[in-house]
Image 1 (cartoon, rainbow, N blue to C red):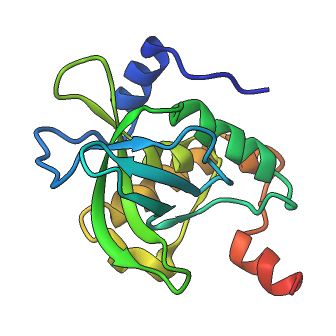
Image 2 (cartoon, rainbow, N blue to C red):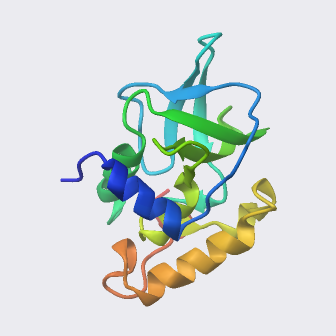
Image 3 (cartoon, helix red, strand yellow):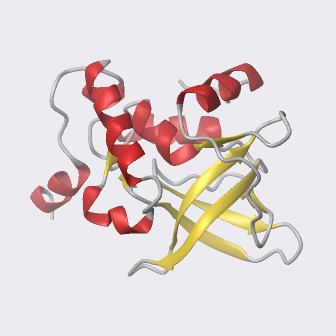
Length: 175
């Protein structure tokens, strides 16, 4: 069972993955309590307007819940996106399901320091870099690819037993 990340763990993640500095988002968002559905989807609520959106992490694809590693990926995302954690959402395109496809940065207790959630999911081996959709994150696509190579080398998460089945291949095979 994965528990919520401590401040020390969030600091370590920030040192190992992409970190934003001085972002000026249009709105302040918070993770809706109990809304992490799987390893790449959750709901966010705007602080001032209470607008609620369904969020899909850009440029990555986590295993499906029924797939090997799917539950672990969901639980890992839950550990980073604890209920009501303040987050920054970068990007605004919608997918065919109406979800906002964004890069997510979790605010830490250190002023000006955020953890790149998408990148941390890839580095921990809890999600795959999704090259097909790299246009959704033009500034960080190469970084996600690099982080996946790091995860493969260290046999993290889904890579622990060698070559992991990509979620898009699993979905195609299990239609």
